[in-house]
Length: 323
Image (tube, rainbow, N blue to C red; front, side, top):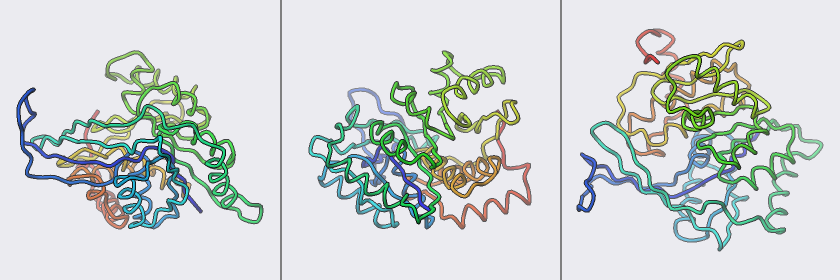
C-alpha cells in the first residue's frame, strides 16, 4: 500500500503578533517558528508521521530552503526520491502572520504561478515510480493526493495509474484545477472554490450548498465535498446535502488545519473507511491541530486522534459547533 502526494512544498516562517500591524509601521514578534509547509507537503508529512508508505513529488530548487524541506520529510520517512529539482524553479517561501488574539492567520507566499514544464529526463524519473508501484506481480493499493499546484505532474501520474484512488485538495478556482477535477474520486473543495464556482459570497442556506455540491459533482468522477472551516464539511448523503459539523476547540493557530484535514481524509480513503467515519476522523485531527502553534509542530500523533475519537464516542453532544 502506498500514497503519492503531488503538489506544493514550501518553507514557512511564522510570526506571532498581538495585533494586526498598521501600514508603514515597524512591528516585532518575539515568537517565531519555521518549518516546511504547503498543502500536499503537510499532508505527506502527517502521513509519514503516522507510519504510512508515502511519496512526495513536486518541483523544488536545490537551494538551502529546498534542502531543509527534504530533510524534514526524511525525519518522518517520506520518500523524496521523485522530487524534481530544477534550477528554473523557485523554492516557494511563505511568511505567516498569526494574530494571537484569535488564532487567525494571513499568509504571503512567494511562488511561481506554475512550475517549469517537465523535461524528458524528468518524465523518465517519474516513470520509475509508476513502474515500481504498478508492475504486474505487485497488487498495490495506491492512493493519490493532489493540491492542484503541480497540474502537469499530477495529470502525468494519474493518467498512468488508472486504478489509483484520487483525492483533490481544491483550494482555489483555477483552470488547471477544473481540468484535474475530472480525475478525482474525492473532490474536496474549499468554501472559496465552491463559492466562486457558484457565483456567491458565502453559503447561508442548504439550497445554496445543494446547488454548489451538484455543480462540483459535474466536475469530478466521484464524490464532492466542501470544507467550511469552523462550520464543518458539507457533502451529499443519499442525494441530500449534509453538514458534518466541526469540533469545538480552543483555536490558537488555524494555519494548516485544512492540510491536516486533507491528510487525515486521505488516510481514511486509503483504508477504505466509510465516508462518515473519514470526515469525522479528519475533522477531529484538524481540530486538535489548531490548539497548538505552527503546522508541523501541531500535527497530532495517530494515537492522539484515536484517543480523541474514543472520548468523542463517550460524550458526543459537547463536541460540535453548529452551522
